[in-house]
Length: 183
Image (tube, rainbow, N blue to C red):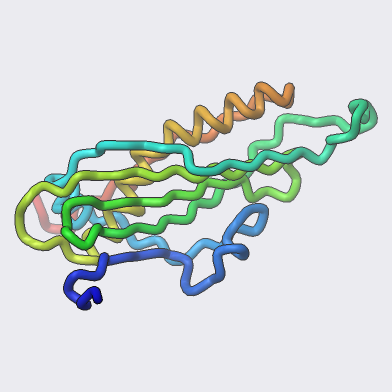
């Protein structure tokens, strides 16, 4: 029997939405916490990334018949993207696992693509990490760590499908303006 203290900590931004309803094209997005460099930094200072793994993917296109439909002009449409983030801390507090699902969400794009990546971080010894700090780290740092893998997967898949080239944008962290009166 596992005590509450031994149970792994978990977090998710899905707001109780069942797993089947969180996938593209209508991937549900929960609230993303505002970027807080202190919260993300407290976790970032204590972890080392040990793995980035593709755990699942799906690609489909609107023009999928045995012969290409030349009346359909598959133009370069920059799709919108959705991200779902889930996390778990192991019961022994030594590992942080993040499951990030990236998806195109645009209805106009001639394709849809979903890719799920697992990131595993080793937690170095120290004080307990708060759920709030971990949540901020996962939504900003872990997504930032996985973004190049998503960009490469999206680009290479679209290229293999002989679709017009598109690129996922560079992920940019928000820059906070200095507080008024500060020097």
